[in-house]
Length: 450
Image 1: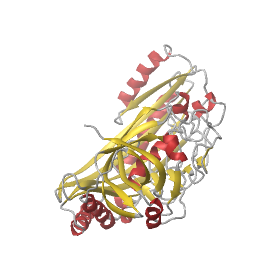
Image 2 (image 1 turned 120 degrees about the vertical axis):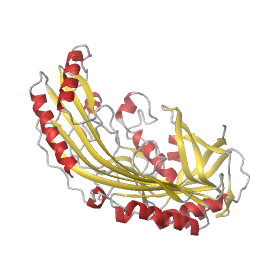
Image 3 (image 1 turned 135 degrees about the vertical axis):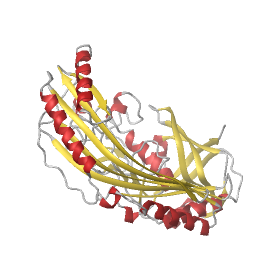
Image 4 (image 1 turned 60 degrees about the vertical axis):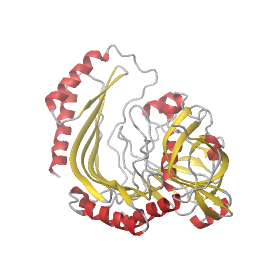
C-alpha cells in the first residue's frame, strides 16, 4: 500500500498549495489505483497485466467562476503550474448564475461493510486460477471456445476541500466477463462481479455462457415487430444503468432525458422501483461520500413507477431550488449503485409467465435517437431466445432492440425475485446495477443492419 501513502502525502501538499492561491474556495478529488487483468481467448490465457493509475481533479472557484483541472501524476510542480495557468483564464469565464458554496466540513460519514478486500492488493495467481475454472466449466458444458477477461482493482479515493473536508476510503472490485462459442454466430455471455475475490463464481459464469451458446445453435425465424420480452441479467445491467443515469439533474436541465417535467408523476409500472443505494453493504458501486464531500445517502428514483427525485450535486440543486442528493460529479450528477427492487417470481416462473415472446440475454451499443423522448436502440448479442407456451424453442437472429425508455418502464408486467449484482465490459454507462430479470409487454424489435 506504499503508493496510497504517497498519494495521501501529495494530497496534503496540494491543499497547502491551494491555501496560498487567490481563490474563494477549492475542492480536490484524488484516486490512486492498482489494476490487474488476465485476458484469455481460444481456451488459453493470453496476457496478464498490472498497472498503477493516479488521477487528481481540482475545482477552483473565484467570484462564482469555476475552473476544473486534471493531473495524472503526483508531481507538485506540475500541479502548481496547472493551477497558475487556470488562474490566468478564470476572469474570462462567465460567473455562475446559480451558485452554491462548497459544504463546510467536517461531516460524519457512513461506515459501509464489505467495500475492500486486501487480497486484491496483490492477487497473484488467484485471477488466473479463476479463469481456468471458468474455461473448464464452459468446455464441460458444451462450448468449443471460451474467451474474456477478469479485472480487479484496489483504490484509495479521497475528497478534500478548503472548507474543512478531508475524507478517504479504500475500495476494491473484481469482475469476470466471459463469452462462450459453439460457432462464430452461436455465442453466450455471462459474468460475475463483487468487491471480494472469494465471491466470484467462475464455474457458474462459465456454465451459463456455454449453455446459452449451445442453445443459440438452434435457430428459429422471428420477424421484426413487437413481442413480450424477458430482459435478462446482462441486458438489465445496461438498461438499469440507463434508467438511473437519465435521472441526473444535468441531463434534465439539458433537455436530454425523458424524465423532464415528470417529477412525482407515474412514468412506470407499479411493479418497478429503482433506488440509487450507495450505502448497500458490499454494493459494487457503494461509497460513503461524493466528489463534493457530502455523505452519500439512499435516493429513491422510481417508487412503484412514480418518479420521486432527480440526482443532484450542489450546483444543479441550487439551479432547481432543492438540495443535493450527494451524487456529485462536479459537472454532472451520477448514480452510484442502482438497485431495482425484486418481485415475487423465480426465473422459471418468469419464463412461464412470458408464455410467448423473446428472452434478451444481452443488449449492447445502446444509442439514443432522441434523448428527450427516450427513443433508443441496441444491438442484441449472446442469445435472443424465442419462447412458446412457456418453453424456449430456439434462438433468433438479425434483430435489434428498438424502443422507448418510458414505454419499457410502463409496460413491465412481471419482475423476478432473484437479483444479482451486475457489472461487465458491455455496460457502457458504467453504472453498477443490482437487478432481477424483468418482463415487458410489446417490446420493439427491428431488423439489424450492417
